Image (tube, rainbow, N blue to C red):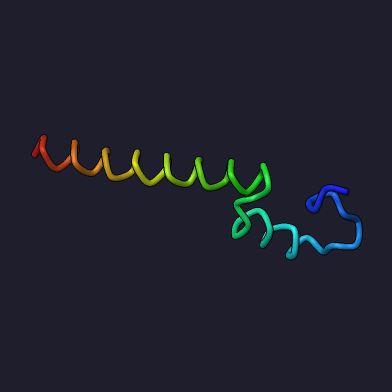
Length: 52
């Protein structure tokens, strides 16, 4: 049975698994999206500060 779809887990336990357990597909997707969000944020700040 998939860990995320286990009906015995609370929403908080499922969220913990997604965020901190990269072995799940949802966890890996969260990590990748978070890395991209950080890189885009840093890039935006660099471009904005270079234009001033």
